[in-house]
Image (cartoon, rainbow, N blue to C red; front, side):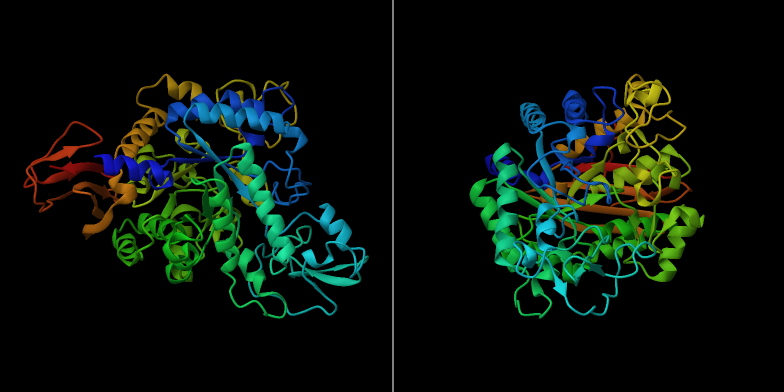
Amino acid sequence: MTGKRTATSDLWWKNAVVYCLDVQTFFDSDGDGCGDLVGLTERIDYLAGLGVTCLWLMPCYPSPERDDGYDISDFYSVEDRLGTLGDFAEMLRTAQDRGIRVIVDLVVNHTSHRHRWFSSARKGRDAPFHDYYVWQDEKPEDKEDLVFPGEEKSNWAWDDDAKQWYFHRFYAEQPDLNTANPAVRDEIAKIGAFWLALGVVGYRIDAVPFLIEEVDGPEGEHKDPHSLLRELSGFLTRRRGDAVLLGEVNLPYDKSVEFFGDAGNELNMMFNFPLNQFMFLALARQDAAPLAELLESMPEIPSECQWANFVRNHDELSLDKLSDEEREEVFNAFGPDESVQIYGRGLRLRLPTMLDHDERRIRLVYSLMFSMPGTPTLFYGEEIGMSENLDIPGRLSSRSPMQWSTGTHAGFSTAPDGARLSRPLPDDHSANVAEQRRDPHSLLNWMERLIRRRKECPELGWGKLSVLHAKGAVLAHRCDWDGSSVVAVHNLGAEPAALTLSLDCTRLTDLLGTDDHDPAEEIALDPYGFRWFRPS
């Protein structure tokens, strides 16, 4: 057992439970209508009670808010509305005291157009920081894939002061950094070192393929784009031995695994976008086959690396890796109204709305995600079944304030009724923490038990996956590690189902209930039912 404890402690991200939140929409401590770091600190005990072991903070840097904080004007400070660096440090201390590690967004593929670097760069070709960005005298052809189709028409914007075109992958207010420039790489390293020194344990890196794509530069002279990630990973690990880099890499497996590097010397973790998208395809069809085929196609990754699994994140539910026909199936099942579809590739709904608030199906999906090989990642409010607010434009609809109670502003803020909040709440606050805490059968209390059980099953974070059964709506899989196993069975369909597992054991211990099984007995599943077992 010593070996197990050492492994799971040293590589803590292999068996973590990650929780993502936006400080401005989590809890308002001073009644100004905006969440803040003091409010988050007051709610750290809530996260600890839920079972969270890693808190991922969306950007809380100073920003003009063109892209919800991802357009950063200062990498070394905190947005005034959210608090001070002192508040940030106190939040970190409190989280660490409760056993929660904290990672923050590292958004260094671009800056805000109001960043001092860009303000200087615009003054001319010889200006300081001019070469921090990508400029052209003549407008080049656009990239094929605009990040925000329909909102931006080109990747190049004209600057009247510089008398040149500058490159931007996202909004025009977010000029891309020239990461082929060694000085820019040094700046990225210094930013990473700064927040590690304050106490964060790592970073979620935004849009990683775009970050290293620009390493090629406008002339294509750089021959090894992945060197940026290797340099950054090595530097941060020297500064802090348990530092982690979690990357947003929405690519097919054959390309995404390259971002782990050799023996995990680039990213430590990566979001499993293919698994997420094919899980929704399987749910839409009520057919286990698409998910089983995807699971069997998952590549081996370095032993120190990990997939980060999720149901919904802070963006739209992206379905871009499905075929047009498959995407249309998911749209028809979960969001047929064009008003909830976005960019032609995704849905701007949270899960409960997609599933008509059917709690049987909601629990099925989270049981399925938590049982997949990898580390589970939650977006704030998922634990109580929060819905989106479609009055909020675009993909920000899922980022409405956290719902703590049925009181004014759903308990998010003590601001007067009718006051302007950082983002508007939906009309229905029935999904809230206060009421669900008092109900032993609530989604919140069920989620706490699921998280506790998942943390007790390192096989799911470390083990080797085998698909045991994938017929009709029923999927059964197992994860084996160091002489022990966990078996999970899920019925994706609306009809009862049953199966028998031919396993070499004497007993199947029920991990989510009290109904142990003889391995020769038939396992009955209710509609949308699920079971976890440990063979012995």
